[in-house]
Each structure stands twice: as C-alpha cells, then as structure tokens.
Length: 91
Image (tube, rainbow, N blue to C red; front, side):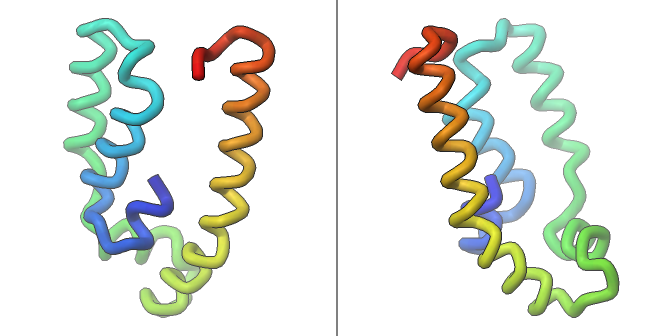
C-alpha cells in the first residue's frame, strides 16, 4: 500500500490494490463488503499526509514515506516467506 501511495495513487486506490493482492482471497463476501465500506472511509491524500506529517510539509512527509518504503517492503516480504514456510500461506 505504501509503495502505491508514494507512486502517487490516491489513498483509497492504494488500499484497494494492496487488499486485492493480499487479504481479499482469504475473506468471504461479508468481510469483502466490510472492507469496501472501510476503504470508502479513507481520507483524501492531502488529509492523510496532514495527519501523519507531525508538522512536516507534505513534500517532506512524502520523502520520509519514500525512504521507509523499501524497508517496509522487505519486512512484509519476510513475513510472507515465513507464512509460506510454515504452511499458513500459499505462494
């Protein structure tokens, strides 16, 4: 999600892309509908950045997010590999 957001996607689209790649296949129809409602409640890109920026400019906040993205991707990849190795998740 973070990588899509840093590339310029709106927050709602970033969440939808990440959900489709990860959790959607594990959810039943009820959970998918619940998640869709939650996605529609996502703030706009500028509101999200304002809320997480801790007083930084929007440009600075995006730079920080861009710096965090590779490490977050590495961490989530490692979690996924662990889940595959333990049989919880399929490749």
